[in-house]
Length: 373
Ligand SMILES: C[S@@+](CC[C@H](N)C(=O)[O-])C[C@H]1O[C@@H](n2cnc3c(N)ncnc32)[C@H](O)[C@@H]1O
Image 1 (cartoon, rainbow, N blue to C red):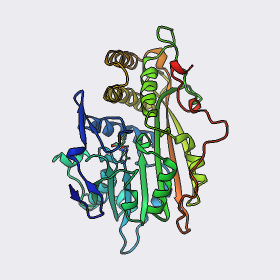
Image 2 (cartoon, rainbow, N blue to C red; image 1 turned 90 degrees about the horizontal axis):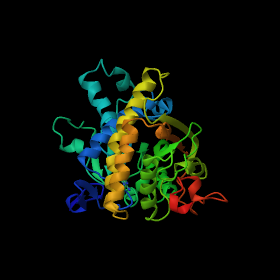
Image 3 (cartoon, helix red, strand yellow; image 1 turned 30 degrees about the vertical axis):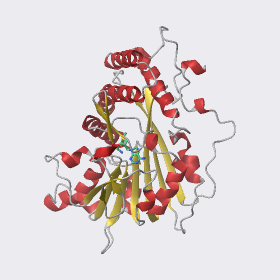
Image 4 (tube, protein in one colour; image 1 turned 90 degrees about the vertical axis):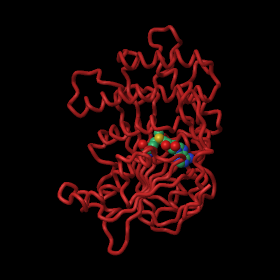
C-alpha cells in the first residue's frame, strides 16, 4: 500500500477481480461495469461522442468555464475530474497548457483560455493512459486512486472546477456528494455534471415500456438494460438520480445558477435527414452501443444473479438489434448536462438528506421490469 501526499490510500493490485475475461474493481461494488483497458478504450470513443454533443467542446457552458478558469497572477487554476475513467478528459484539459507551450500557434485559443491549470483525476482504478508510453501524460496532470463515496474529505479545498461525468452508478448518495464537491470548490467555483441513460426513450424523452419477449415491439436491448438496472438496485437506494439533479442542487445552499440541459441522441443513423454532425453522432452512438453491450453483459454475468445462457442470448439479441438498426430500437438515449456555481458563502454542511417528491414511484424513473408489471 502506498500513501499519496494527499493521504489517499492506493492499493491497486488487491482491489481487482477477473470474471469472464474482464477486470473489475473491488473498492466500490455498486459500480458494476468492468474497469479494464478495453473499457477505457471504449470510454475514449464515448469521450469523442460527448464532444460531438457539445459542438467540439470538452464541457457545457463554455463561457462559464472560461470565466471560472480565467488566468490569475501567481495562482495555478485547479481542476478535479471525479471518476476519470480512461483519463482522456482531464488529460486533454491538461494538455491544453502543455501544447500551448510547445505548439503555441496551434493551441493559442485554448492557451489564452487556460494558461495555468493543474488537473487531478481520481478514480477507483488507474487510467490506462498511465501505462501507455505512446500517450505521454502532461506534467500538469496527476492521478490518484480514490473513492468518491469515501475519500472526498481527503481532498483539499480551493478547486476552481469539479467535473463529474457518467459516474452516477458509483455514487451512493448524489445529494451528499454535491455537498462534498461544494466544500472542495472555491467560492465561485464551478460544478459540471454529465449523466447518460441507456434505457431507450421516445422522441419526448419518455421511457419506452418493456414488452413481453416474442411480441413485435419487444427489444432485447431494453430488456438487457432493464436487467442491469435491477441488479444494480440490489445495492441499496437507486443511484442513477440525474432526474433529480436540479432539485438536489437548487435545495443545496452552497450552489446557485443551476443550469440543466437534456439532449436526446438517436441510437443510430436511421434517418436520411441528418446533417453531417448529426450523422456522425448517430453513427458513433451505434458504434458505442455495440461496444457497451458486452460491457453490460460482463457486469450482469459478474453479478451472477441471472443464468448465463439467458444473459448471453439477451446480449446477442441486443447486438443484432443495434447492428441491423432494428425498428424496435429506432429510439433515443438521453443525456443530461448540469452546471452549478459554488456560492460566495461559508460552506454549509448537509442538515438533512434530500427527499424524493411526494408520490414518488421508482418506476417513473426506471423502465419497469416484466416481473413487476
Ligand atoms: C462510465 S466511466 C466514465 C469515465 C469518465 N468520467 C468519462 O466520462 O469518460 C465511470 C468511471 O467512474 C469510476 N467510478 C465509479 N464510481 C466511483 C467512485 N465512487 N469513485 C471514483 N470513481 C468512480 C469508474 O471506475 C469508471 O472509471
